[in-house]
Length: 85
Image (tube, rainbow, N blue to C red; front, side):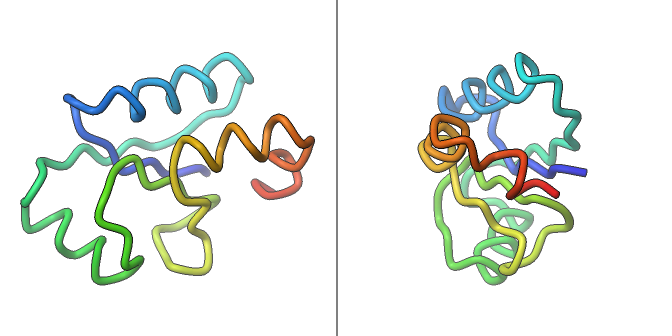
């Protein structure tokens, strides 16, 4: 199951969720506030300081797809389905 770490105020988070919805992918969303302990924990795992952070499975460095731009790149190049397997 895809995981998305997002914030309510992030337009790229909304765009990533809309893209996944339009493609029929299910995901689990973890909402965080900027500068929150929850986000700090995820930053320790990924080294990524922005949201969205999109994972192909569990939240781990190995499963990190990165953000919206990378999600769109994978979709546009026909690699999203393979990446999410």
